[in-house]
Image (cartoon, rainbow, N blue to C red; front, side, top):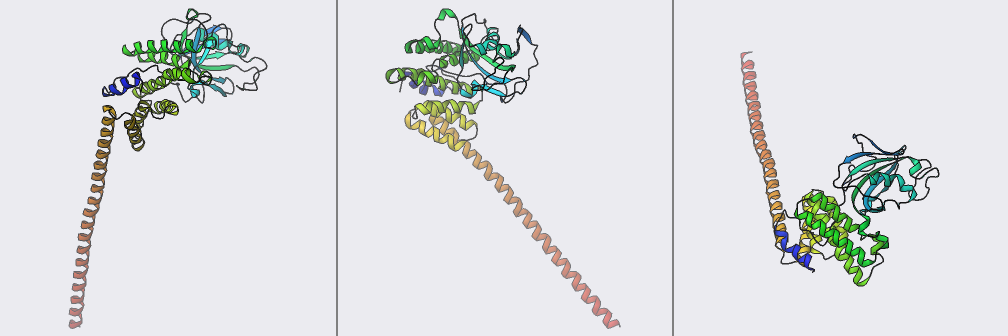
Length: 365
């Protein structure tokens, strides 16, 4: 177990503490379910004759300059039909956009991004002239001719030109080093309780470790990259649990467990998220597996005890509830029997008096 992981398992005892690992990722939460463009009430800012922007969430800091490498998530729809044709949130992988070097069809999006600060989310309206043009695109993404577009965009952060090359031009060591620097910035922000800003740094760290990059690695370089990438996903899970976004936390733990099925931190955090969702049996399985690989971890033992106490309390509650139901039935049954006996007695008395009366009449006649 590496040092960061050992440190993590030792510090579980502090329940509310988010411990920053090697690096971490928390992507921006989409504003809605993403099937249709969000409804935004803010005033539209005209950025270009064919581009306007409505702010959904304010950002912080400065705006990127020309040739900055921007990291962002977005969803894209055709404006008239509201057909969604791209969604980077679903891929859990931000994209890189170098301002001034973007593809022609992203010119309008680049204008919108250049007006945004880190952490800002906006609805960007783009005319077809600065998108896929007269021809449209009949492959991927599928966009009809002369289609105006809507983008829900979140700028995670950006690297200024002075910081060097685009990811595609970097060596393996340079990319891992860039991710590690973002990780360190994120850790510092964690300590200052600036959680949102820390998330953005971690998101940018993971952006350097994309699938296209990881597929090319083997041996020591693969190990170096995973030593950054997997802790990124674990810190995503930590942040998402704190934000009560448990399903997303489970997803990021699953990513780590695909690479490292015996990772106790991933099992522990997935177990915590499942427990919060009420998935007690599955949570217990995760905690027990985590305990197998980290037998001295006090936090795992504590969570297993808490789970047992919760289940015991639930059992007692159910027992009392069912006891009350059966007691009510017994009392109701006793009352019913008593009532039935009274009816039988009354019927017998009526029958007796009726016979006596009939005999008396017969004698009188």
